[in-house]
Length: 232
Image (tube, rainbow, N blue to C red; front, side, top):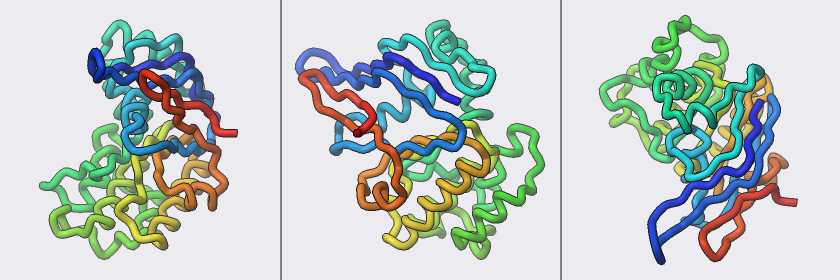
């Protein structure tokens, strides 16, 4: 599903320089991996680079999907058209702030990725996720009328609505109470396995990560930044 080697993202200069380094990563269909580490170490930066939102300072290889699309080549040649297509079709993003469009209601926010790809707006998996997360009574509301937790749950369903190959979630449970967080984590894991996706989830909640026995990509602080490696 995903294979990557020697990813580096550098921000700042001089004494303010910070490098995020991922020596290697392999994910297969159904894998869900938690990215853990202290605040400010670069977890969100790593997620943005994997999601093709940041151009790395170094990258040996990065392929995605059964066809092993060469994402590294597209990044180095700055093929923005192809990168935009991959972001919309193969990637699902769940940002910390939700990122919902304020002028669309819940129903239209969720259906937007499917409509942009020409997919039928009706999806049994989307309906199931909405039911599990208690979103059905909120469909006609706009984001401003939702609680923070309701916005985050809506954003998750939107991120998986088009059934991407790779789901990238940045602190998806940060705005949720423990029970809702557990429910969302369980739903993410079940859908990733059911849809044969892969998922990378940034989380500060090590208790929740341990509860679901998720493998971890852990941060180690270095003199010039941070390195992420599988935690043993």
